[in-house]
Amino acid sequence: MRVAIAGSSGSIGTQALDVVRAETGAYEVVGLGVATSVDTLIAQAQEFRPARVAVGDPARRAEVAAALPWATVVDGAADLVEDADVVLNAVVGFAGLPVTIATLRRGKRLALANKESLIAAGPIVQPLRATPGAEIVPVDSEHGALHQCLRSSNEPEREVARLVLTASGGPFRGRSAAELATVTVEEALAHPTWAMGPKITVDSSTLMNKGLEVIEAHELFGIAYDHIDVVVHPQSVVHSMVEFTDGSTIAQLSLPDMRLPIGYALGYPHRAATPFGRIDWSRLERLDFEVPDRSTFRMLDLAYAAGRTGGTAPVTLSAANEVAVDAFLAGRLPWCGITDVCDEVLGRHDPWLPTTVDDVVTADAAARAVASSVV
Image (cartoon, rainbow, N blue to C red; front, side):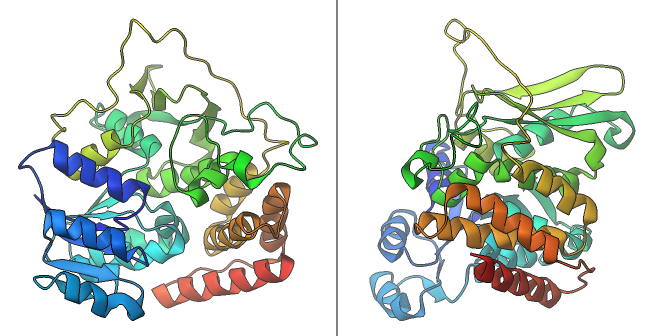
């Protein structure tokens, strides 16, 4: 299986290479891409010898070409698609959209870790899924779990009653809005169960990550928002559940290890031979569940509202959140201000239906401009 990894220097990209190392002989890495982490890219490429590497920083492409004389250096991660059987899109944020579009247009399997591109451009992405050979296998642990659970049904469009996404609750579970007024960046980045990049970790702390996952679940599986629920599960062992019309609920369980859903997406329809996240049932003492605190973590309801509105509302929310999270990480916005900015931007937005990628880019840029002014 020939694999290209867009965003190879990040948390998902580096763990994907762990999967390749573990699954000896199963994968050939034909493409690696980064935005600016050139030193990491060079080290990865020297180990895996891909034919193509993508470098987002034009000032450093010559340096990469000199260090990797056998490889073709391309401008963007979307140029990695051509030689691959499966493309892992691990680019962070809206910047991952070109990889999603290029992969599906070429009829390839998309291992999708970049939820924002599907959320922002759902009306554009959905028709591309009909391209012969094109398919999306999600890499998020929650959506990977749902994908696995749905395999138990021959007619999910008729037999699925409800999707249940689990949320760890992040580092601030159980704390009141007043207690969260002065939280620091370091506190927001201290996730209790997952090791992720800063943007996704902050999103987890606000429950925005779960809100975006609700929209993504709707886009991936075609289930109405009224039949997608969220439950807080602090152990992060149950990664999501599907309830069927006969009352059965099927769940996917494993210890928190992103290499499991990565390996599942790369190898689908087969499973990896390496037991990532295997549970020692003699040590697992309890599994807890509780409803999310929607009054404190208002991002969840904002995401449901944007998803139900549709059109450019999801891309507006996603873009506003990226601007607000960047401002928080830079010390220019308090943690509670992230939600306030997103609420304000959505309140000012007049949604419309995008029909082209340029429409989505335009809506994203407009939302970023409004969010920047609000910040």
